[in-house]
Image (tube, rainbow over all chains, first blue to last red; front, side):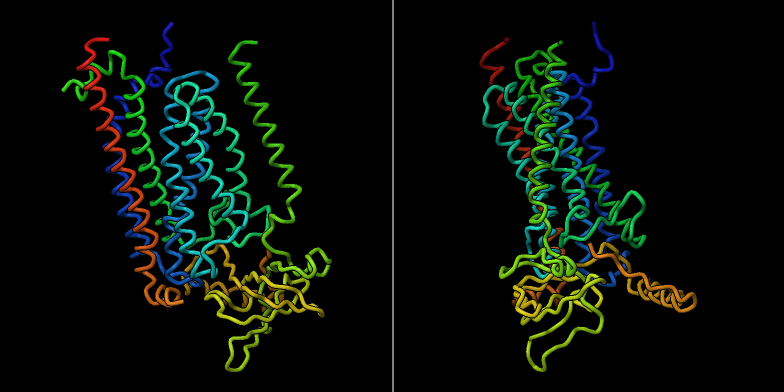
Length: 245
Length: 157
Length: 55
């Protein structure tokens, strides 16, 4: 029995679909980055407390949020792959990991550069920063574990388990500023509204959208390479124009 | 049980187990996960004695005194219930101001004075241009005068 | 100490090079690696198919 709604879960179909989407995602992302930076640096006013330094927020917050969301999506795909044994899910999980790790790195890096002039330190072992560092290590652990096992199916299963187990860290990052005393301030964007000037908000949300589109484009591009690599012995790969030439 | 359900059970059990373990570890470490103690906790003798630790709170209004010529400052950290005097020699961060958040690390001396080795500024999650802050402060002052309502004190986390 | 003073005198340079510059560099490295990986994989598959014939 053919399962129709799983059509796009077939690597061969998804390969083509992702290839069509990537240019659009890339163009939209570049445009939003330009608009976001323009609003962030030319329109948004200076902050009453922090002066110009607060402008790091426009990359810091989107990168942090992306690093957490991408982890949850990665763990979700890993779980799907483990339960339903779908080929594409595991490939998506391994395609997301490097991008998530880079966003976690950007979050930590920009946070350090923001912390130095404002708080007085680059780094402090407070709960928010430590748990974000653990997130980076979880991503790196996932990548390393997957790379260390030769059989791709077994690598998928082992790293999926790591991804799922590590997902408990994400709510810890989010709630760390509530649960414990930290140097890091509380969340600016809450479910009940935000405590930020409107132009600053526009800049941040535009940058966030840009980061999302960038992440999608990059993950799709990476998953296409993974699909090619893993399906290299199938007939459909042999019939691709980029392979035939 | 089908293999799929078995796998699902396995994952669910593993996840619950790890979640529980992490929860327990964090629960037992909760004193150490907190970056700082509040002045009230110090008064309740929850802070370590003779060892370096951090206190966090607001710099009490009117408590900041600079040594003439030197880099030594004294101020009080308050959580609006209790307040503790701190002495510090060094450069203060930009955001260090009376009424603003601060975290100081040092050793408590006899008589309840903290000799700080490090003073960090803690800012809040509100971002607004200076004019908006002025307007807000004025509106709040006008409101508290006309209604003689108590001034809202920011909660120290 | 010198850096502390410099960053306060040139906040925009500090923000642009330190945060946005590094972020863009990270994105550029990622894009470059992706392009290379795709090229290498395609080349490998072509070689495999040419030498092995139809599998």
